[in-house]
Length: 401
Ligand SMILES: Nc1ncnc2c1ncn2[C@@H]1O[C@H](COP(=O)(O)OP(=O)(O)OP(=O)(O)O)[C@@H](O)[C@H]1O
Image (cartoon, rainbow, N blue to C red):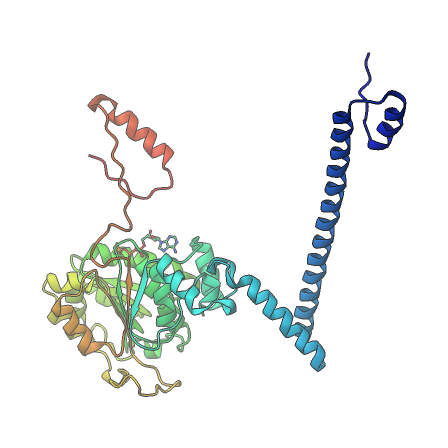
């Protein structure tokens, strides 16, 4: 059996004296020794660099701890800390917004964030959107409710509209159907209600704290389902008042008291006229699918309901006027896929200094819908559907022809 030799340069020198080997072989072995030395040096350099990084991280951690504990620093330490913070900030400047803490977000990051989610705004003094649920000013109870309902991340309309509603500002939301508009107004609405006195028997007769109007029974039903998902965690009662059902029964439910009424405008106005309920303490109103309500001829009924609410709580028309923090102002949310003149008229009359939030391109569904074309024979169709449904269990809606 032949043994493999390890030709080191020193061995070769001895070897060379005795047998005078080929010069090319000597050169080859020297080259290999040089490569090995280089490799050892590189490894050492890497080790030192890693050690320095670890020490740097430790120092940063120590500074953070010091800050947390409120330890007083001398001017040298403060300068050193500032330097380190600047270095850390410099390292982070090129990070994507998703890797940054909220206090590290720059104007540019917010711009990219809005572009990423197709959010655009019009208006003045616009609050920042919330990137994650925890960054909104939702109460711990509501955050828990969101977690239990299973919404891991807010949808773009929720990111943009919730912080505005939480400031009691009026919102015009232009977003597609199915974009999560309901939670976008329900969560600020529940936050608002949970700060009010509990709805006791003495004040029940004054009517609900909030009204949501929608053009159709089906949509009202859908909104009710979505609202109840969150409201039941806070013991907030929801009553729906829609056409096609006994008005007396609905009147009875209203008289029993509730915090939120979800209604179609015609039936709600009927109930108000029959004095089944008042809107004397209602300061939160949502008009969902306002353009459709107008198209369906509900403008007078919508206005009738809005006029039955206390107008003394409307915010001042002058957008620079200071708001009284202790006062409750009427908050109006209006959602519409389009803004025809009649909707603009409504907005001008009943909304004050609203922030207009648009998600994607108003009036089109292109941004939300992915289309796939699959050609199959008529006989294969059912099998293919079955395969697709199994493979795409995550999709909520599929239309097949
Ligand atoms: N953040 C979220 N995470 C996961 N699912 C969500 C989230 N927000 C809403 N949804 C779900 O998305 C669906 C559509 O929401 P929602 O009904 O609020 O949409 P919409 O914009 O009001 O649509 P429509 O105009 O048809 O009423 C619902 O099933 C809702 O439960």
